[in-house]
Length: 149
Image (cartoon, rainbow, N blue to C red; front, side, top):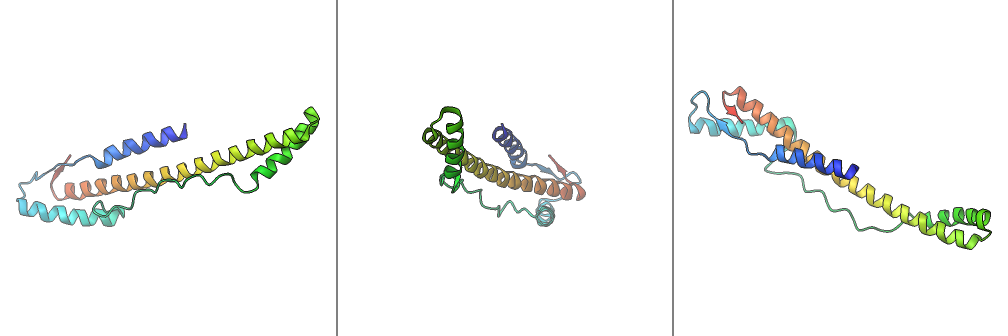
């Protein structure tokens, strides 16, 4: 569920941040003046948002391939499984094997989930930077007498 919500939020922010903006010279500014004003507002927006669309941060790296279970998880699972196997069925070796397999599988899932969460957080941070830049640029141009949509 977390993955789906993070993906949906990222997509919504991406669409909003990457949407093309149109700048209309509402006070009759010349094309030359508009170019100067847009350049000045770009510089100001980069300073304010700490995000430069001409130089975006690198895309989040793909999560590294699964490296397996956390060291020691199989041993801990085997110990727990042996205790349960001895108490429940009188066979500690079967319980130990089952416990080791279950613990290593859970450890892998947790490692994969952590990597995916880190990637989603990096992507969300980049999207927030884009949105902040667009908002700052729009505010600057609006202050200089342009209509920004």
